[in-house]
Length: 380
Image (cartoon, rainbow, N blue to C red; front, side, top):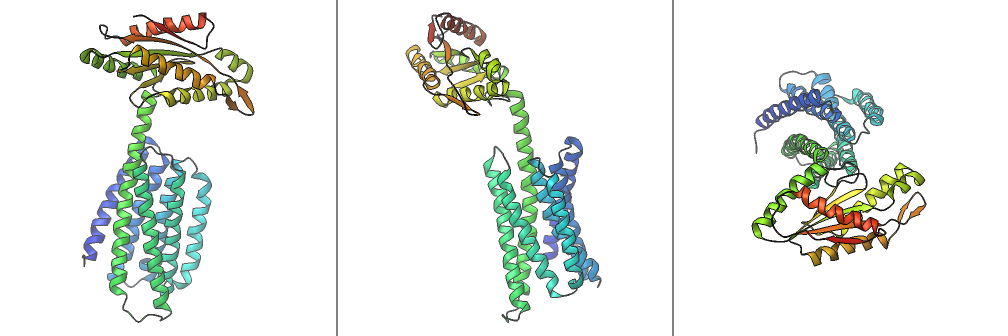
């Protein structure tokens, strides 16, 4: 079997490093989730240290009572970290404080008896079960990391339930088996999974923070589509590739007809929801490799790589009809929205996407002049 003191020493070292790293991130970014999770790591460290003192001193108030309160506090801090990420930690402060105080009152009379470990194990199992449940509220891009974190909490809860069951059976003399080795394996599993969980959280939070920063730089915050700067950058690479491969490429300029009336008559909140609805409608008709962005108030731009003029016109018409044949519903209001589309097909020559979009914009202007709710093709 693995050497328990070695496992504990490695766990303490890793949790100190992770905890210190998370606290430094908190002071740098002022995100409460880092503070709670860093505190969770350090509480687990102190719990291991105080519990390990049993080998050297006979002082149950520290080696049992304090150690158990610390080990209960560690998952509670992690739970606050989860809620802090979803901006809902404040209403859970009192609940977590209540659990700690209740644990103090329950454990104090039995801190030097076998009931101490049974009660502590039950509370920890409940904490980890709730932590797995609380993760459902997290909205993250990388689902795999979230699933892995949830799996760690579920396994942890199951291990604690197993330990609880064994301790109860042993306490009631239902089984005669010596549980020393089994409980040692459970303890090692507890330490390893806790450390693994502590490592997954900062990785997930860091990747999510980077994703948020990337989205802020490259995405329109309202619709989630690319913004103009990012669209132009990527479109230029598409254009270079089209020139290199001698393939055709279509550019579309799309504008919502009479959108000012929507804002004036129904309010800007309705207008924002209408923009998101139109953005989804446009995206639903595009292929995976097509590029779409919101580049102005109610104006969208699309790049269709490896697309002929006929294919581009057909796709543009599908987008127009998807919006024309449906209604936008918001707060019991049913609005009929339409779009005008200008399209240009690029065959070879210019490497400037802005020039291509300017030509497509001329088609958009003609579509509006001709009565709106139509697609107009321009010759390059």
